[in-house]
Image (cartoon, rainbow, N blue to C red; front, top):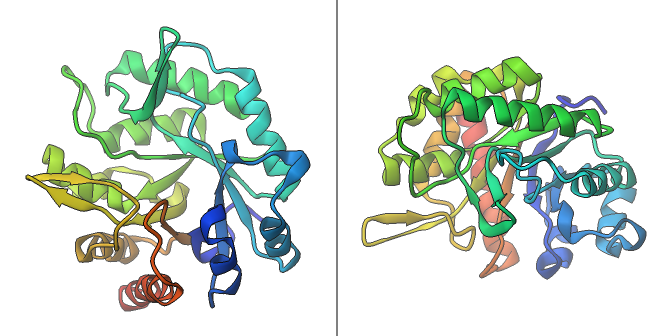
Length: 271
């Protein structure tokens, strides 16, 4: 399977909903959190999906590619081993850092959008790519702050990252919505500035707003505004895949199937 072959519509596999994912109609591919898997003891549900021919894509959360600290080889090695065990066409992580000065934030932290920070990110991405068996896609994150003295917009930052590393992009439209509300960014400008031809696939997720702050929870239903952004993206490019993320407060199978159907509907309407 080529990295940009049609993936379709998928859902994030989690152990709490393993049986749900197995029986949901129309799940074309799934994504797994790479750090939660052990190559020697893959979950039976994942093995069953692979036997059915469902692509399983490893998604990492701990490479910390935006950190000034060197990339930790063991983390890259594990991600590559998971990819090989699953026969995955690509792997992904985030444009962020999670560690600095020996401390772990426990959260995905935004990278300063300066050229110096971009140089560090590019070097770390190239190191990871050189030690991975498959291509790497990188995801835009939701943030509650922007570092001062930024020299590039997020779209420009990602465009230069792609140009210098030849990585793919994993675009999270829920994160675009979060940043628009919390930081005042312009999702349409973002979509104008990024190289959509390098799009690997798309994330869609739910969230909730409290006291004027939008929280990207992955524990609530997908908001109409997020589906509208998916439609805006689809009007510009046919994404190879779109994946629904859900990490907590899992709803019924019927509700999850309804969210997948809503994603398919948006893709069809904006074709």
